[in-house]
Amino acid sequence: MAWQAADLEEAAGKLCELRRAHLEARQRLRAGLSRLVSEFAGVTNHDHDQNLPKTLRLVQQHVRVCLESIRSQWNAHSMEILWSEERMAIFCNNQGADLIEQILAESEN
Image (cartoon, rainbow, N blue to C red; front, top):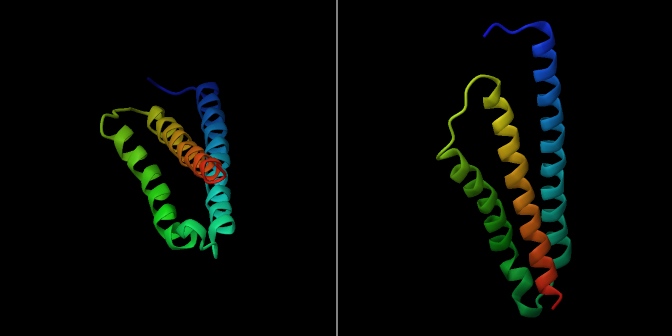
């Protein structure tokens, strides 16, 4: 298929929207990681401080495994490659942020 100017503009617009959403998801994840540090650093009750490095590592590993899992069966072509990469990153970063929110909620119980 030969790309027409309108097709390219539409595809670029879609990619920009996905990249904006990806950035928001990544910022949400980073904010969550920062919140974990501020919440648990120096808190020795229930070994929160001692377990913090492991928690941070596991959340980051969760995001990485999420991406690897999706990519293990992924097969896209053309512009769909770029769109799929962004959608996967959005999903997995949001999964990591959701995991952090659950960790924080459970620690309050």
